[in-house]
Length: 445
Image (cartoon, rainbow, N blue to C red; front, side, top):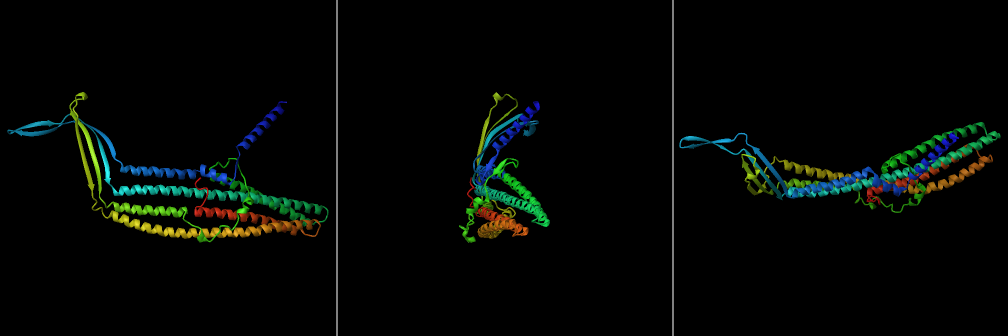
């Protein structure tokens, strides 16, 4: 009785655990995966922090335009007073000068009035913000593309597994048919052995497909910012995207604009930064003017009776003009370096744009090929299914051989896999094209 009760408790605990796991399981489609990735991925959070850091850096630079106020206090203790000698009627007289305690406190104010280099530096910090924002957008575009491609890869792995499982079931059924016919003396032992070998050969492919699904799921979880052990069920199939595989919108390479390409936009911002850095170097040739003011109180005493101290105010105001005359040709060399950097950046942009045009052309060609192959593969699947059905019936009535049956099964499997591969290729390169052109609908979420 006690043993039965223990078994019942264990079973109830197991059921409760399974129910909790079922409740905690996350069901994810493509849109949900993108939303989670854009909110939970550490890469995105780092990029967002960089934007905030750039904002703080700009405020730090702008603080140079504001007055600077500082307070100071000084206490000096005279260890040995200075002695001065005066000659009175030929008689030298020594007089000690100073007091034991010297107190001084005050406030100092400084303000830049004319600072061309500082003004340009403030403008440069604004470009740093633009660059950080663009890098954050780049991170989002890359994340969206990576998540989409990983999601499509997972769907391909799942659909491939379904195809291979059907193939395995068909081969198992055919093997049983051959075995039955062999038992009845209607098939040779050679056919029976080949059928059994063929069935065993399908098992490794099935196991490899299961492993591919697990790896693709873990990769997608990592991109989403989830723990790879977190229970997630990814919904969907490549078949549901078949309607999107179309030539609509697939124009020539020149029909796709690269104005929103994040790499080119970052290069444009960097060019503005270099141009501004050159202006800063040139501005260092100009004079600067600053205002400073000082207000102090001082007291000199020989004791520490603070209530009897007399405090004497002292204040100044001044304008400081600085005119750079010669600095070892340092600024001239900086300007020359900036010019060379600008030329290099221009060449890099031209090369990058050509490479991007080539990538766009490749994506369009792959998508166009996928559209054409999908139509062909869909017909192939229909014909292969019909051929396999005919082959099965022929073999059952003894009009066909096992080799014909095996060949038709292999052709059917290849046709189904090619069909799913066509859909996957189109979706994969479409995601890549969206990243290149910067036209993702999820980048700002």
